[in-house]
Image 1 (cartoon, rainbow, N blue to C red):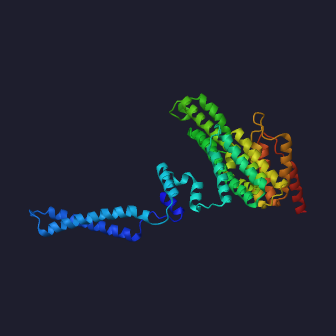
Image 2: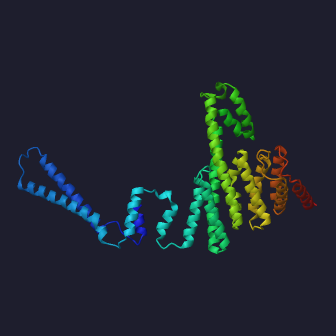
Length: 412
């Protein structure tokens, strides 16, 4: 790390020249050979007294090892006599050496050091925004500094947008797009960890979750398994201890997932205000793993994910985003099942009645803008999910009837 810092500031050289290093290695090898020669002569079976040659060889060995020491001292102090003098560099090297900072612990610091001291203010501001957005993922939501970090990030994004400068708008776009990708990945891992804990109990629970709609049956199996003896459920641990451990881990995963989902909703709104929602739409259309895990997520987490999906679908129509039809197709195919199966109860309301009606119109317009074959796939999957789930939303019967009528006209 010290060498990287030195090279970043004006080509400061902390390594000896190659010629001096070669002389040092040659002298070391020679000294080692003379030491072996003297030792072998001293261990000879009939060598009682040294001859003149033995004494000379011993003196040469001592002189060679003295030369090794002198070269080592010269190599240690030689860089101080060449290159520019940077007092601030010496202070930085001493502090970095004392702290022993890992290179991966501060990517923004590495970027600054490798770009030199004259950093363009635009790049510096972009790194600052990326840094604070990364800290949001790491700071616990219960910390009193969390809202402080949110306020700083919100202020930077809003002021960049208010200036209207092209470079500042590009900073917002790049930083928020990166934050959206990172936060959605953290949300996926949190949900995946919670599902792993749920499936790691017994072989029966893993078998049930592997069948279609097994996650819904598994919730009832949990209640039954708490009543049955441990021998039947296939575990040797105490049932109470296992349930307490799983419940504790599940609560921790739910808290982490809810935090990341809320942050992702905040980032989505910021991208909408900065005209960068097309980046979020593209990433959301590829989040198939997150979509499948969200079907069995906590109702609070589901609420945030449904709101994100609704906002992105609505902006496709209201903001007149120019995105390929395949992106629209993937969005509808992926996230329509969540709209059907998400918990829309009174405890965790997701969308109001007016918002649900508006979303049905938005989805109807999006479906009608797609080719007939894509409409068939989307509406067939919707009909299957809609007839199975307990929710009456979203009702896309008008879109389904229109597709049927259009198909009849093509036949005629």
